[in-house]
Length: 459
Image (tube, rainbow, N blue to C red):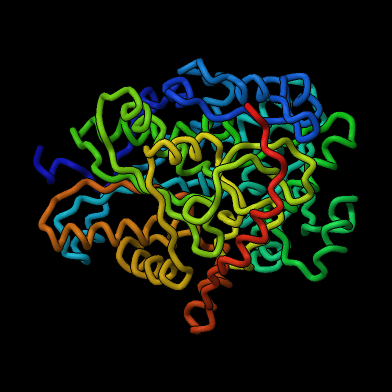
């Protein structure tokens, strides 16, 4: 099919939107390891998890076998306010790079939250409301998840308490104010409001926080307040399930024009964006129907895939959550206060960790200044100011397109553009002023975090 027939933006019709979420675990030969009780080192049951999570979300979390999960009509109705999102052919970027590669990106920034996070936020808020709960608690890094959840809770009439990583709370005040506009309370983490927050501050005075710290506080508040449950924007199986709408729409759009990706690229912090983007393609790969090269891109300052260990670890710094088997830097590892706030988690999704361990995914890490160079280049050519998180994928997509220029191969490259960077202008200011720095943890720093891994279950 000729290139002229592929539009700049490929939009699906409303009736082409996915009606079911896709559960990639159903096609995995080796399933992700179960969540484990840190006291007994035995797999967590639904009853064990009921004090923390909503009942229906627990069922989704533990279901490794159901391939397609129907999307409730109420959630589909909400999705229609901003979905389907466009798949963009990056003609301008291709021309600027003078590459024979064909570059596509799935743009998830066309909603007020500015990111893909709303796909799971509305689902989790819906199930909380359906259960008759008063409200939910959560953590947020860069603020995209907190913003999305505050929007979903406002729509459904739920209370929303957000613990925001302190460095992001200070660097991104406007995203904080969007959350408050939608009715959420926003607390910088670690804080003095919780026992675990006070403990972390006593052990790490002046800390800028981490997603692990914020998770600990949010879980404590949820479990100590009747009528509340904790919800999480990444990492968990249920989140990757909800985010599969990204990949399902992407594949449908590409199939309409007979385009088969050679390389699929996503940024990786906890795994929500990458897992959602690659889900249907990974399903084909797992079933032996088609092969794809899939690249996870993480910050060099928090390299859980590329320098972490595949082991059971706490998902939170306060060590009050269940253990998950994942690539981790250790629950006590607190990354440098870089600007990719949504990627500052010490671990990785158990689903993606298992797929990476089994060789279905490759991973690379990139330094912050190189990421912002790519972000600036992309903004000047494609007209979208990208979020720092997404810009990790942009950086590697550009690198792969340059390789195609060297070899003359016209590969199809697809990457996820998770959202916009309009609330990240402090970071862009530092980059433009030449004051941005890179931090790569030393082997000694990483060894200290990994030395504190908990006892490993004999499963």
